Amino acid sequence: AGDIPEDVVVDLTGEQMERLLGNYTFPFGTMVIGRNGNIVTGKLGTQPVLDLSARSESEFVVEQVGARLTFTIEDGKATALTIAQGGG
Image 1 (tube, rainbow, N blue to C red):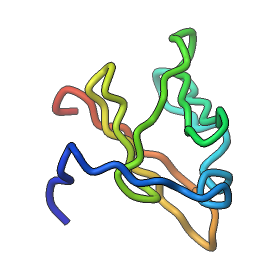
Image 2: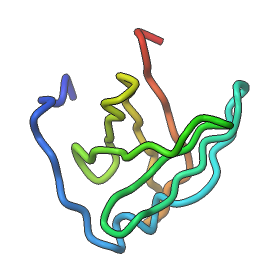
Image 3: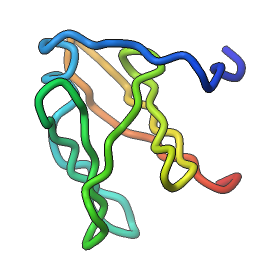
């Protein structure tokens, strides 16, 4: 619990990345989580694809937009995604 230090970057295995991939629907659009080699990526609606920086196997930051993404992982697969940006 608590804040994750911003300078911590975690390398994920291919298996850890694969469990996150998919489409997550929000009232403001759909976030598509993909993979580009050893980098997890995210694309929200018509916005450009952005790299996600892993802080743990379920916590990521999107430095370009100041957002934090937290995946809920159940039975080895991500089942939900929470986005925090700008205090919301």
